Length: 342
Length: 171
Image 1 (cartoon, each protein chain N blue to C red):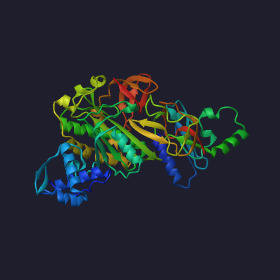
Image 2: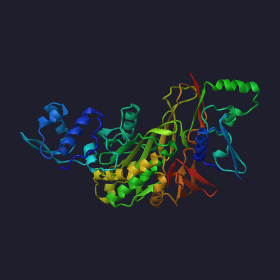
Image 3: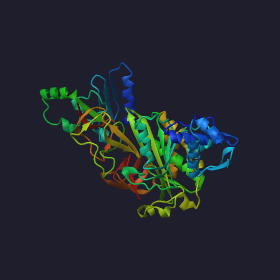
């Protein structure tokens, strides 16, 4: 872990406590020898006691330090947590997503946190990731509860660059393709996509995507893409009501994945796709064939709950807007939103 | 038939030029776009499918004339004096239209209270509804301060781009 911190901009302060903590990590990662507590205290304008408190908190998070009296601290081991300085080390040079990370141990919902920060005009940079070890109020469509215990990967990606509103819904579709690519690379599991953007393994839900946008006229003022993935969690510990329909990477493959490595690959896939959607380019159509190939929905007989009614038919087509065409025998209905029931 | 996106492009194009009126006629449709009296009317020549076939769907937000309001508003004998009072009222009325195609929701979740009802007071930043497409939730704000007069779409209904959703009386 002695590789030097990249030439990326340093973490933008969001909460000063976390910012100093992350800066200490960044500093220690970039140093090629032990750094004394005195130097850290001087560098960050905090007391020696405060330095010690940060080091202690980092140890609680899983960092291991080599400490020698009179010499100082050197990082010996880093935990697999999506902390800004740890993720930045792994980001592909061209990737802008993930340069800034707001990490929490626990929260209600990373989407809610991101939206609250954006609405408070806190100056959240484009591409910021809000993540937490666990969520107490994770949710899916229509406010449905999404179980998010420690071990899963719960995050929201903040997009503040304007996206044409008519294209915004393709953000969730391209995200599903990027997540699938990264999942297949890191798990070797066959991953399919259920319309519009659920990730499935063996017919059971492995992850979901839910985006929230606020628009000014015809473009977004922000988009928050929430991604919940059951990675290193034990599916047998899920709430009973979702056990039949949900699974996890760990339960399917018997292996845990590195969240940091996974995330770096996910962002590498996702970054160009989102940029493409934002400039009003083809966006989803670039990867729609991949979506179709991975689809668990196309060609199937499906029941789709449209909110006010349920339609039944064969999912015959996905167009390049992401709209699902369902042939009921009498007519072909174009579905923009709804729950696909098997 | 023209797609919503194409109509939007045409409106933008027209906006940028000094041309006031644009008419397109093909075998299955007639399309006319006019600047001074902003309204878009698509007349199906034969049986066409979809909400666009309804000629009363307006695509323009501002300066909406009476004829672009949904038909139920328009029913009955509209006398000249009616139109006059309507035009007068228009100044204080704000119509919130759907900025994208999607499903219209009046509440954040099925068991949550609705954002607004007729009579609700709103400010510019008040959320009045959500429009969803493909699990992308777009919270729509009132944009003006005032009172909700009427809700023009049903919960769970598919709404088109530009479709009127709320009538708000400015205060």
